[in-house]
Image 1 (tube, rainbow, N blue to C red):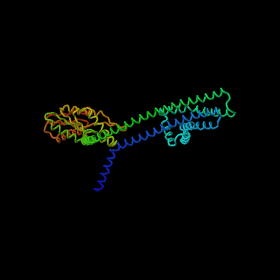
Image 2: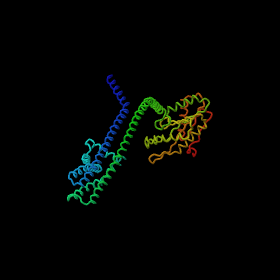
Image 3: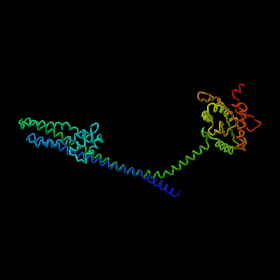
Image 4: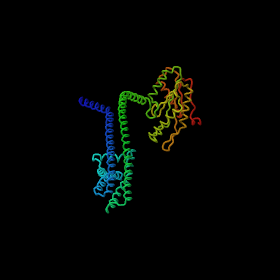
Length: 435
């Protein structure tokens, strides 16, 4: 048993260590991922720069050998033209394959290989195009690249036209020869312009990526520093959080111990504690108690069930608290019985308060499932004038007054002020007044 407990403690300690270091591990992994991603992006951009150099050189060679073929008619020069032209055409096919829906990765791979790109660079070329073609610098570079498509088509057609014209021998018309040569020069100039802009955009993108990665590394370092600060603060606050939770739990338990679970107002325990405190401190000050017992509660419970009875008790509790003074206490003593402690309250004021409560309940109609119940209460009032009165005596007198109110017909206030020479009785109910 001790060995199992020790093993369990070691496991908890290990898990706690893992929990503490896991944020740092995550940051290190993140930094490694950023580094790997950075290398992949930079490698792919470098591959595009190298491919652009191959593409630009090949299209220049195609124009050059086609121009030589135009003047010499040698078949070997036309073959060199075709070989050179195949490089930018292969790159063109690769771009079309990646722009298609769906993307044809295999055709793109074949096209990039035809374009003279190194086989190890091809996956990076495809990856960068597929997932980052909307990044500003790459989008601009692709736009320059695509702008050469009509020129490649024209150069391809131009080669076939020249080959067709040279079947019957060299071109004798000097104007025709001059036109064809000038057009080749113009195509070469246009190709060169797009190639330079392509290269410039990629260079700017590469520098922007380098700057971004620098800031990412700085941000990662800052995150590590913040994690150290956070962990230190967390260790400091853990004890405070534990103490706050313990304090909140104590407050919750104290609230449950002193409040009624159904209505949320004070319970009998809190009522008696407050009453004892008031009796101890009353001295010459007036103290009055009110005990209120609902008259029709059993009929609501019997006819509509306990859920309706609970609802009635909650509504009565809210009604009793509406007109209370700030220092008065309203409590549910149990069942359908409620009590009020009225510190510094003269007998006649206590009777007036009790009568107002009786009238408020009498005017209150409880509704449940389209059924309505008149709610009344028998109320006993005890006025404590003797500083030596005990808690038991005060409760007994108030309870006796409430009992007499029930005996006299309910829905009335009965007063016991502890002075047999003075009888204070509140106004009777409406029914008694009519009688």
